[in-house]
Length: 320
Length: 301
Image 1 (tube, rainbow over the protein chains, first blue to last red):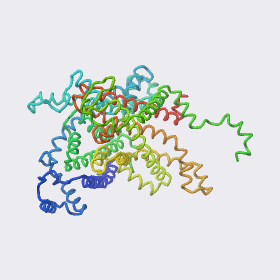
Image 2: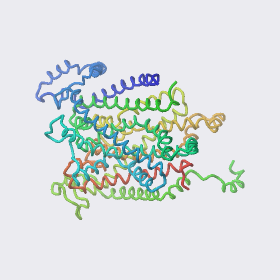
Image 3: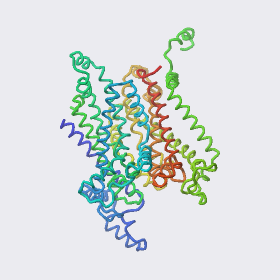
Image 4: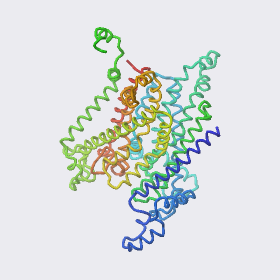
């Protein structure tokens, strides 16, 4: 187990390094630099050049990269010219919102997936199964942003059941129960919209897994020994069918990264995805590079987690 | 060869196993939903490309200050947007553009993916190792962010550069799939036999292994087409796809990011959203039917 983790970690290091070089070169290719938005346009170009020299912006790219990465490792990503504050502080503020959104989505995903998958697998070829399969069929094809937009239109605007933007009602005292409830209320519709789409793969996986397990010999043995139907399903079948779901968990995290960008943009929810989009439209590149790097590291960690879970639940695939 | 055995081959035709094309066709016709989807898709493609021959894109995307935000009427079937542009015309042209970019990106990713997968799987060993580490790296990238960042970074931004950027980050899935299939395929006897007969590696790969993988390539590319249309419209929705002068289905949906349009002018964004949904559903239906046709265990007929 630990050998696998260590082995994966050693692959991760060059991956993250390569990612950081790619991100850095991308930032260099973008029009403008750290000074473009900062200074008055009427300033003397010679003075501007002197300033560039002082900041090291005229150095060759690998020198600049080294400066940037050594600072980045220490958590210093420079200044955001839009908010006039350190990037790490800015991202820190937004990160919690995205983390809450992702957490709520994950919880809802499994709350929906497990009962639906079990019903569909246990009573397969009944009307309930057909209904659930129909839902997964449509949910599999539906793009997240269109579904979320429809949800916002129907439940946010038409019925007015949910707030249509933001993460908190204005003027609420932090720390109170009211504050917590307001946060939760604002979170519910975005998280539900995303969960209803992301849950589809898990439902399909669980259904086919249960149907497969049902026909295995050890289930026949369990029945022959006189185990009750509920015991067969809850103890014997469910336990074995949950393995692939657990392994899929890490990929779920990677999937959330792309999803939150759309969801935060549609529900104007102030998280990292919304920050990314608004920063890139305003050319606030120090924020953009930091966010791309952070998302990259997050998806590498997601892949690592799913591999680790896989080795825990299934001893056959441990790397020797 | 054929000439000498011709009297027998007529007899043998009877119990010859059906060709893959006839299996695919039979499977689609048997599956009513997939068949309807295929008809619907053909109709949409024909009408969209047909009508857009008559429509003038430059005229449709020209701003008309006297016709801002009109509701649907007999002149503008689906009203006009905030620039006084006809929504119905944009819908037709947008569908054409979305389909075109989807097809282009699917073809390009298919080409790169199949080549990389085939070479890597056929040769195995060191070549495979190098290619797969490369693929691994691309797989972990946060695709959406990187594509958006590249779209902003590219100085001369056009449809060509947009499809190239999308291709650059979407070819890995198909490469992995084809590689795993090619790894299995090269162990089969016909490849060994062909090698013994002295065929070159290139010939074995291209004219012997590749045709055996064709059905799986077609299935994957059909399913990818739906995903690519979804991704393109998603990017256009966020404002990082096509420029507004080249509307896509996503551009029309993106007008709904303005809360007022979302709340009270459904005719601008709802038809485009539903069209994306139905298009992706029908492409997926056809793809699933193709998938069943290539897997003998799942076939219906």
